[in-house]
Every structure is written in structure tokens, then in C-alpha cells.
Image (cartoon, rainbow, N blue to C red; front, side, top):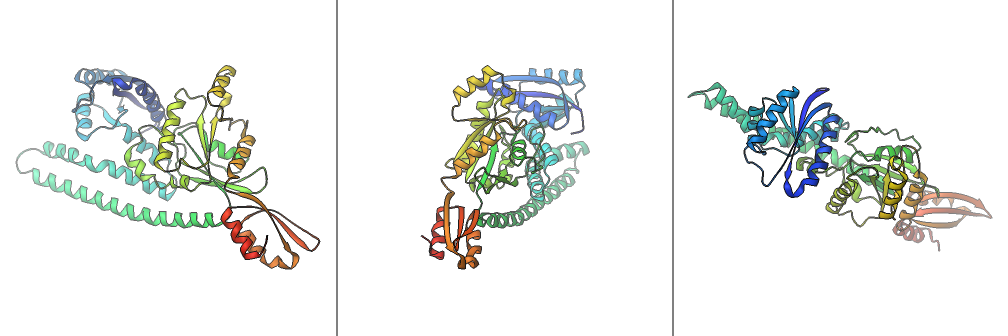
Length: 418
């Protein structure tokens, strides 16, 4: 969408889910603003069932058309995915461009994706979204041409377009497989290096990228902004641990309610980093009014990824925005959570210590001593463990290590150490 495009938002939901309707509509406003729109009006309707032709009732359609005219809105954005027929019927009734939640999120993702994999994933999701919507568009074309004898060219054009998109989808999937194979190779190489891996996960716009910058004392240089989906592509950076050594911290794409199924499938591979982590930092916005619902969304995604068994640290970010009383209440409700402010740096050092403690179950602290004459074998130690310190004295070499149980047993067996 163009900058400052005037839009009207439409929130639709079942009467039994009125609370979700409110929070989802507020999220839709943030999404629209992120896409560069100016929200000039809102319309809500709680229904007992969705209207098959227009999603909302006829009376609401007429009210929406009047609101679009009165506010001079060029676009109407619905907070649900519309069928091709519903979209066409609403455009005819409202004389405005109709965009659903899925199309809006796809637009934002197309703007934000920076890596080749991210752009391929977005284009695949866009084409998967467009493919079932071709029929309505070309049927309208054929009717405009009109009359007997014009149906054939219209149908042929529709088939050409469908085949072209299907071919492009197949081509994109092959490209993605090659990109993923390269990323899997880089991941395997990273896993072969004896360094713990920590994944930052959480809802979109909770401050994950800001936290990664804070954990690296600003050296990460990760783009961060107060917008939904400010960053889409996973970023891995080395972070120093308080007890020595370092860990690789990976910033993953943020979650959101009602994430389009096409995007869930497309970005599933980027979330695979979560499954391979030794520790998860689940970041939540302490000041968000719908924090509990956001955390539930994150928890469901982690369960789908089979990542619920990984050691997890709950971090409540943006605590500087809370009043003293609100913070005390939240601390009582979430006694295990760590309260931080990535923007001001409050609690970041505590987060690092908590990470180091969580890693202790998987990454052991061990000491290894070898004769000075065995120095030629130090490469094996550096290849199989993270060396925190190396000292010499009395004809001996002493290593302080952070190592996995498997590599520790392997090192002892190969070096003949006790």
C-alpha cells in the first residue's frame, strides 16, 4: 500500500469471542500502520454466523459503504481472510479496494524480507494466496468482454495465468529447497562448533531484536523498530557469558494471532532454529494489555514445533513502561519471570546469568589437565569443547572447559584423561 493510504478497518468475530475481536482489531490497526496506512475509520460486528456472500450482514455492508465514502477511504481492511467471492461482492458494494488480514500481512512481509530465503518464502506465500483467486478475476473479465463467443479466450487466458503461477510456485519450492540445504549445512557447521545455542522467541514487537542488541552491548547491529514484523529473517550473533566463553543467540521471526496458513508453512523452516536450541528466551511485552493472550499464542507455536521440552526463560520486557503497582502485581502473578528493559539495559546482565544457569544442565563445566608434551593435541580439545581458559605450569597444561556430556566422554577417551 502507498504511504498514508486512507483505510477503514473492519473487525468481525463470533459473539462468543467478543474479547478476541477487540484485541485482534487493535492488532490490525498496528498492522495497517506498519504497512503505511492512515486509519480513518473502524467498524465492528459480532455475529452468530458469518454471511457466506459478504462475511458481514447486508445492513453492515451498507453502513461500511457509507463510512468509506464519508471518510474518503480508498481501502477497506477486514480482520479475517475473505473468500474470492466475498472480496468481489464487497468491492462492488463499497466501491473501494478490499484487503483481508492475510493480504495485509503478506504486504508487510514483502516489504520486510531482506534475505533471499525470506523473499522466496514471501513470494511463495503470495502466489499460494493468489492462485485460488484467479477464477473470480477472469470471470469478471469475460463478463466485461461480454456475449457469446468471448468465453473461450477468457477461459484460455485464465488457464495460461494459472499454469504460469503453478510453474512459478514449483520453481520457488525448488529454489527454497536449495537455499534450505545451504542453511542446513551452515547450521550443521555451527552445531559442530562447541558453542551453546540460545533462541529468542516471542510475539512480534516485544523487543527481541532490541534485546539481542543489548545482549551484545550494541555490537550486533540488528535492525529494531517499534513496528510489527520489523525483522523477519533469523539473525545469529555471539554473546559473551558471565562465566566466560560465549553462546550463539538467534533472533527468530515474531508470532502473531491468526497468522495466515500460507505463511505458517512458508516460515516453518526459519523456526526450526528453535528446535535445535539448548535454551529458549521467551520474550513478552510486560506493558501489553493482551500479554496473556500473546503468551498463549507463543506457547501453542512452541508445542507445534515440539520445542516445549527445551529449558525456557520467561523474560518480561519493557518493564520501564509499568507503574510501580502494576509491576508489583505482575511480579506476584509471574514469580518465575525475569523483568527487564532492553531499551534501558535494566536486567540484561541478570538475563545472561539466567541463560548461563539454564545451559548448565546441557553444557558442563569441566577441567582437563595434560602433560606439556601433549600440547600438539590441543586442537582436539578446541574442536570438541569451548575452552574458557588455558594455563601452563609445573610441566602441565590445564584447560577449563564448557562441554556437552557426549563430547566430554569422547575427549577423555581419546586423550586418556581421568
